[in-house]
Image (tube, rainbow, N blue to C red):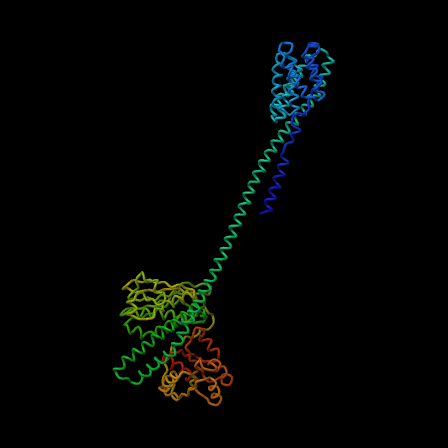
Length: 628
């Protein structure tokens, strides 16, 4: 900013110096064009002789020549105070004129013009053209000095006309020629001077205009500079404020992320720690139900089993939401047959449909390609949750699963899914809320039908993760419809077969020898009892080091390996065992946490995973598949 104002000041000074007019060259020179002798000649010695006024006039001119201006002025004033008559008018007129010249020389221009005007008035009586010409020229000089150029020019022009009239009155041709030449030279000089004066006037006006424009430009530049300065200050203040706000937002974001991470870790830890006692509850309930309890005890054991299964589902769903929210869930790309997948889901839910007397139907579009590529695990989870909800909230009704080809282009297929039921329906004001965690629409519904209230939350998050968006249409008493669209690639390679779940038979398990590596005494007792109930022999160790040493000398049909062991954990133990035994199947037993997944555990050399708390059918089926 400092350099802007320095430039403006310099520019203004330069323009002003160029625009300032040169007053020394305007109109006439300041010197008188008439000598004192000429004044004596104008008065005329023959007219006045040795009169008192004429003597005083000559005396005054002498004082003037000697530059005794005060005495000259005093003497001339004595003349103008004398009585006026026809003979003294000319000398008084000349005295007024000379007084005006003296006043001009003494820089008293205001009193000078008064004397010139008096002289002009008296000259009108005498009609002395030479005297008039001199007076008019002096008045012109006065207005020139006052910078009233128009008036100065008019008087000067009148002076020239009088000079011309004087020349015409000359009787002598030689004198006429002489005066003519003098006048021509004078006129040429005066014309040149007038032209110069006109140019000076034009230059002055132009310079004045330039000065005005320069001042306007400087004002605009000053205002612009001030505005830029203010804007710069405001911008700096805003930038500073934005930086502070950004810091606050970053801190708030970090705190929110830390809080979310702490919440996820807490829920994961809680759900993981709950699995061990839950395994005991579910396992003991299962064992008691298999030992032919009394009829009075059967009701309590069924309630205990139901509560254990409910808690298991609740914990699994919390863990699933935490995995999605913490971005620790990955999308698989597997080639599969959608029709086979949906048929398999329908078969697994037939018993649940029959429990509420519901018709469970599939409507699959034949145009859907058989070789889609997608995440079958998450797709199954979405559809299973939606069908479970539909079957749970519908009695003596109908549940239909529709799959239609929506679009097919560039080796990509878009499939439209719809799950419709004729159940209790959802009120309009609750339809958005049902996708929130722990919400089922109303307290009455929650009490009557139970459930965790997390199923639809997981469905919404998984569909969003796969690139879709779920929609709900529902009317109370008439049912609900959930629909969504998902995009799939089309595979040209052989399909991954989706096997239907086969139920084990007891003969597959009889007389097998299994090594159980588990440090929890309750889990040891429950797992041993479940195995012995199927005629399986079981040996138990509570740490990985002993298991490694035993397996170097003894063979088993299968190994059940707890992941979390004292000393070396189950994954490390598996890696060490695989160094000398690559044949014996090893199944991981784990309460899978947020940081664990099936693929990770299999990468250590394990053949399969059983999640705690055990579901008996899944437990026996997983073991039986290695005894075909």
